[in-house]
Length: 147
Image (cartoon, rainbow, N blue to C red; front, side, top):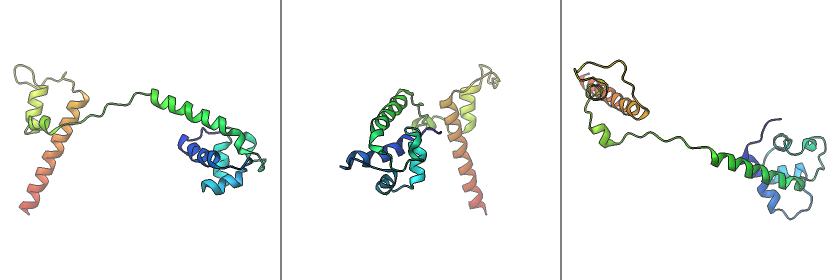
């Protein structure tokens, strides 16, 4: 049994909460949600294993389980730290007119020799990538004008 996707469980839970019917079967829910009953059964099997065998099973009974599952998944999602987005601003890119100037500024030692032990962090690598992309586009434009 696979773990159901929370967005699809929300999609299933919405019509179950809105309907005033006391009994909602798999086929009725299928018409309400707009998904095939087999797809719904795959997702609801996690909460009610007999949902495939008993088509008359009342799915209103598993609403508390569905709500608890969504709350649990959202708690896990909110607890995960988001990765910091690496951005190179125009001001940072303007500091280095060419790739060579970046390498000279970040990767050379006192004598002007390239230091093989120099390590670049994620931000520096992102800036370097932007500089390389800029230089490649300039060369392509120059090649087009030449022809």
